[in-house]
Image (cartoon, rainbow, N blue to C red):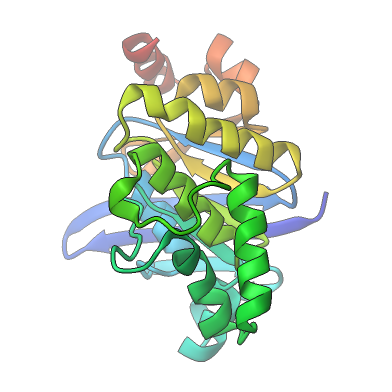
Length: 244
């Protein structure tokens, strides 16, 4: 598999508060990475640093051969189009219908025609199981449905990698499965994904690689079966003992 993303000596601090340091890792095309760890480990900040939504203090992020930390804003925006982001809180526009939410970025950013954007949005909404919800507004949808719209919206830009920041943490338990099901299908279709999650079943079943973050660093990188059955660090053992 081709290397898609490389993180080198990445560091982030706010004033004197260190969030993470010395992170070195790679992601290959088609790889699904689950980023696990205790609350406060810096997982979400790390994910946002990868596409420079939260600029790192130092270090490099190299995406498709381009060092993002060295680019101007215009070049960075062009590359960000290839890095879809799905947040905890959906971030849908409440005044736009579901289909308009999905169409918006392709039309505004990529100058896709209204007809082509409509066809694309219908295809993606069908893909995430919402073919009957084109014309409704986000407020009439459940949390799980809203998150699936958010995934369709991210896919509308034809990204090369999707970054998920705890995509099920704001959902009622009965809605978690429908979102994870869509993500699992994306993984099966070969989408490169980085997923910050507390869903251990998903991490074990769907991820190719586990990154375990704690105390400001990535402490362990391993295959899911190895991580869950024989973690290498005391910190990972303690984490798993508390949650499993």
